Image 1 (cartoon, rainbow, N blue to C red):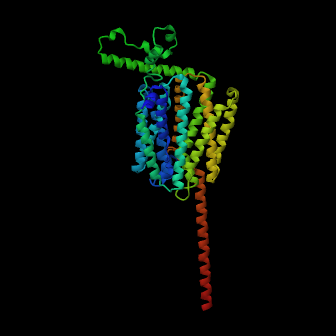
Image 2: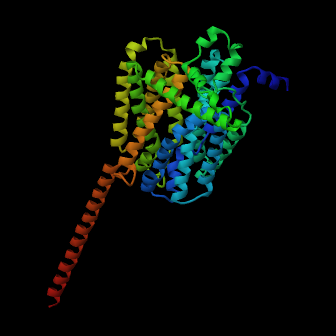
Image 3: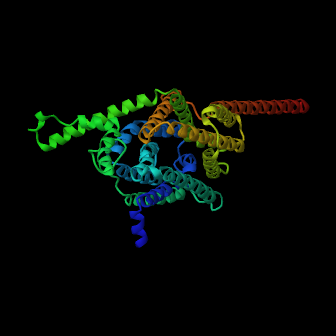
Length: 472
């Protein structure tokens, strides 16, 4: 009991511990690498239905929800949105387990889009609860625990499928239990008293001790000055109190939007940040697209109904390699301003090469290896891009730029999905050339069978004629 009270009074240990518990169980999903085999198997959907009608819904819902959820997260101070994410997790896996049909699986993807849109609350919550001196430490804890949980979940799923022959249904049941624990743990998170944009004034007043200190006033961001300007005028004193509060909240909201626009303009006015942000958006769009459809590609190389699959083991190794490469960047001592662009070119070329390899190979193990290289290189480069951008910005502007870069990436991914994948666009399957080749092989095989059949009929007719001649 004394230990519990000590953790709560420590300032940063208790919220970090609870958030790590939430992050672990929300990311420990053994069924995730087997989503496409589950949809194409027990759910009886075709691969074309999965790729053209189900998976694109996640992209569309994520794009639609990202910006409003970003503002809502800051306005309600993170914890309610984390709880909302826990609810979305539970609804997603309840639908996977007990709902059936194409429309139900599209609804699954919508709720999973809500899950990913609310991830911003998980990564931003801790910065509102701890002082700046603990930022690096708590960031490492919160991010590493999600990587560990993902690796354990993928590995557990693979072991259960390969060794215990557990069905995909029970993998989803285990995932539902895990995310339910995460949802329950979210209620123990302390409620933040501040946020990065909407609730900064009260915090700075409390933390500085006096608003009258000129040094404190001068250190406030322009956003605070904008908020002070938006106080209702004296002509509005005759209005009821609730109307005054409504007007003030509306003005504060507009002030926040204006400040966000000003901050974005200043962030992207630097060439270095602009270059890294352009790469971030393009690379993340491609990464998300690959991540969303890689299981369909694996299923095309080695159909889950006719062969053993090792998606879970591959995802576990890929996540582990990603964590190693990300960690390595933090310990390598070099001038990234000089070598960063060189590393960007080399590892981006490796990424492109691995994608070509995955497409043209017919060997599933080579395809798996290409995916490992692709994911490890992307995580290495995104880590470099992250600290290159973060080193030049304050925490508030970094969070804004992080969200905006991801929004642009998602917009690019949506355009690609609409044009290439969606049935209303080109509606291409996961491996068009492979499918065409298989159809040609089938036609050739069918033609050979007809030709051999014709030869057999011809031989039988000649034998009959010979028998007639002998009898006559």
